[in-house]
Length: 634
Image (cartoon, rainbow, N blue to C red; front, top):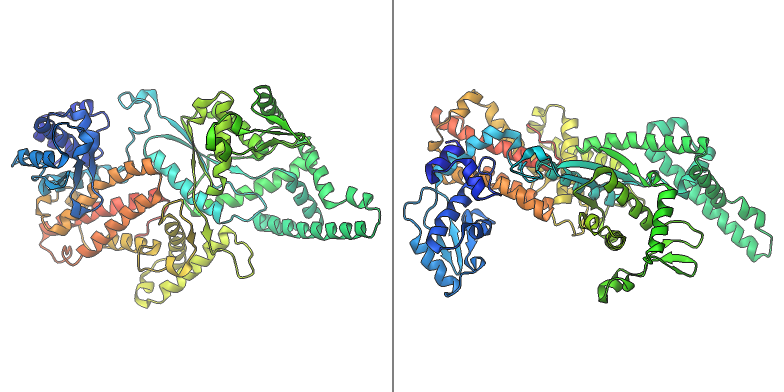
């Protein structure tokens, strides 16, 4: 039954009337919204509490054995009786033959509701079929005015990944990339206008040093073949030279020798002079820097594509002009936000923020004694420039928790400069560390190396099952996809803020809640359709009233929860919320196959069960793509 027909049948209302009554309710895209709206109507009659108070306090449950919807009586703030007494009273008054719900269960002051099977099954599966890849997306969330789409979408900037050119793409960048890619997908699915920014570490004296290294040791072919790795090797080599040079200078100083000329021509001084030429827009120096940057970005793009990630803007520290930073420095000084301290300019937050919070924000330097602006000044300038350029409604920085203080300082200075409205639009989404990713020698690994290693490990695991391996088309490609899934799923398995240990054995296993297991579950549900001769028309006309078994109903109940799961994730910004849902679904599917056989069943029952599994495949795939995974079908 179509959802609009069900609304009409149950409450005698049109979809538009339901949305007018409950502005955040959209039954046409979220089946549980209909049940919430109906339940709010019924409870209003029973309790006398306004429906506008009841509706937002109706929650979905954490597990199916705890019902489908639940309401905590104290949240309704009814005076005169104890909440547990009210819960019992309201449960008794609930209609015996409600169209959508069984009589509620009482647990202390909670009322738990189970939806009736038939209307749920007959409305949810058609909705999943109708929306397909769009099921679970709530485009209304991102509209400036949900009642008037012509007013446009809200705009969000997500800054993530942000590696340093010529330095390893380390574990922190990997986490930022995975989490940031997910958040960008999440907001895009919610109807926001999303701009993905990669703010590269692409400026500073180290690029003068890198240019010297290339003059001394560079290889054009190696640069073109693997720019990131080659530049890193050059950077390591020139730093080793610089360390050795400093030791020689120190020894000569101790011996009483004159080192003036050595210091004047040291690598450190040469790098400083080269970078000065870059800041003065010397044509040759800038051209060489730009070549390093462009080649690195080309290589990064290929790696990001493997992770289903793209960027709208490859920005970077180089984009922030000296003039812009000088202007910010002057403004901070004029407004007495920054004050002089031993020749440097600092912000003493204790002067502006009372109590412990002011002390916690410390006294960051914004300009050194030699007049050089620091990262904080650069970031202030970049943030204000972005707001001018994009007029964003929200901006998220996906950066490790080690930068918590830096981001708090940044947002507070923006506020002190008179831009509280901009500061309030900014959010730092932080995350913990990845442990155990160094090699035995303690050297760091590049992302490409990590992905290659897990793909090789995955290929070895696949080969252990000869029968299944022989059926795989393009096994190397599948191994690569499974390897990437294993890395991403392990990263998203816990809360963002938690540290975790990079464990290749565990992550590449097909047992447990891993990336390979999730892919296997998708491939298995995909394979059922291939064993039948059923058409899309057959599934569209399935007799869904035949799906009465508990396993079938529980899968439908989980399908109905998917849009709510996504809406809840918009509040927590935790990818593990979606991942946990997907594993619930895979477990429900796994336990159902022996109970709900498709091939060999009577034809009408086969069609109904196939419609169920087809809907489950759609939702499983939608969730996986939201996380940035590429679902495999076999």
